[in-house]
Every structure is written in C-alpha cells, then in structure tokens.
Length: 192
Image 1 (tube, rainbow, N blue to C red):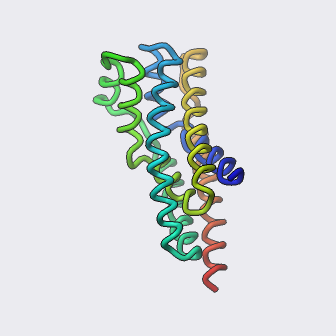
Image 2: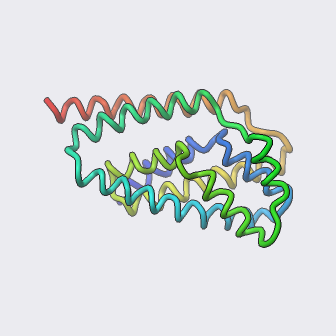
C-alpha cells in the first residue's frame, strides 16, 4: 500500500503543477475562503479518484502484467506530451468559477468533479491503480492533488502571480516520460 501511496502522491502532485485545476483553485480562492475551496477540492477529488482506481484495479485484474506495463508506459508518454501542451482555463470556465453561487464548498466540489472527469490526473490514477494497491493509489492521488491545489492557493494569494508554468510543465513532462520508459522496459521484460 505504501508504494502505491508514495508513487501516486508524487506523480499526481507533479501532474497538477501548472494544470487548469490549480488555475481554478486560485480563481475560487479569490471569491471564497481558502478552506472552503480546499474542502470542495478534497470531496470532488476523493470521488473522482475512487472511480479511477476502481477502473484501474479492474483492468489490472483482467489483463496480463506485461501488456498493462506497455499500455501504461505509452499512456505516461501521452501524459508527458499533454503536460508540455499545457492547460488553461477557457473564458467560459473562468466565468463559471467567478460567478458560482450558493454553497462555496458545493460550487467548488461540482466544478472540480466535472473538470477532473477525463483529465490527465484521472487517467494517471487509473494507470497507477493497474500497478499498485488501489487503496494506496486512491489516498496518495487524492492527497497529491489536494496538496498541489492548496499550494496554488497559497502561492497565488501570497505572490498574486502564477508559478513559472513552462518550467514546471517541462519538469512534469520529463517525470512522466521517465515513468513511461520504466514501465515500457518492465512490460517488455515481462513479455520476453
């Protein structure tokens, strides 16, 4: 469980740096109390990542390890490319974040739930759950995402500016590519 927790925490934390989720967190934090935003993010992430690990666990049980590693390796190269391409809030997403009404926690939670469906962190969590203990992946990926988004809130509030996105994106892409290379080598080794 601990290996799944540590790997998932690290991968998801790095994947979130410079992601649109951080931009959403900073936007919501300008309107709501920071702790409301963090609670909303935590609830949404817990639900999305529970579904992600369930999918990953099911795939892990159904497919041979070698092929899982190869598919996961290719997926991580895709995550690296996606990270380099970058993420930004559309005008529509930014307006929705700034006009959300009602309960702050509910508004943030619903926005993050919808934003994370099909996002690279959800797909990375599915991939990690095929390799590691699902409970460790679930907890690690959830805490990793919340920690990265909380960092964005703190940095955004203290410095009133964004992290150097390009540098963070390049670093995250390199880590994804390294994970992908390791998984490909492991997958090929299992098949031969």
